[in-house]
Amino acid sequence: MSITIHHPLPYPPHPHPHHPPLPRRRLLSITSQNQQATTAPTIFKKIDKSLLQISEATSDSHLWAAACLRVRTFYDFKDQSLGIKDHKRYLAEREFEALKERVAGTRTGFRRVSCINATLPLSQVSDVSDDLCTSCKVSHYRGDQVVVGSLDINQCIRLPDEITGMRPKGIGADFARAYLSNVCVARELQRNGLGHALIAKSKTVAEEWGISDLYVHVAVDNEAAKNLYKKSGFIYESDEPAWQARYLDRPRRILLWMGLPTTYSL
Image (cartoon, rainbow, N blue to C red; front, side, top):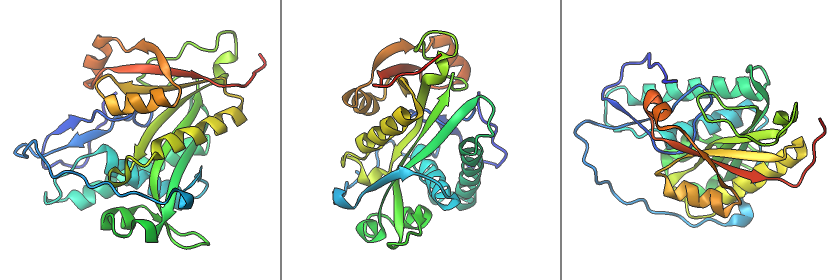
């Protein structure tokens, strides 16, 4: 289902080809009509992985930082456009409220949802991006941290507007199924294995929940994401029908599956 934009946009939106978005919401990539196709190459910073922390978000401040990172990752903005700062905050606030609702267990159709964040000390990323350090900073007893990666794990039968996983079989067994969504890493810190680390943590959480079958949706043309998931153990299960992608005005997706070493009782 397409989202309704209540805030006027200074330029036309285009679907973003990245990871599956929040349930019932489709993230957009916003670019200038006159923007050139070529942009400056991103400089990737190597990190000290011994300082990386990956954990389930339990506070509003961590959920807010995750929401800001997702807006920063899933939307492309022409920074000099009028009203962009206010529009970014509007998108982050809407993301934050939806995320809080699902994590709190009040969103219909979701049995359990957890937001998993990867954080680094502020001192490790202070030279990467002022915007990242400002918008995604959280306080910690060991000092300020920055959320540099995030994903959601959703225990549910299906995600809205997405193709449904077919495993496990049996009455009641569908609650042993979970989906990953909103997988993102700060673009300046990619190529550090943060995506693999987030997925590894999500597998641990899923096993603790009694999940036997883990799924993720990915756009058919997103080769980097497909390679990440396949290296993490996911395999192909099914394709989204072309008519559905056209109806939802987005790139067609495929559904990847992974079996987890756990048992469930019907």
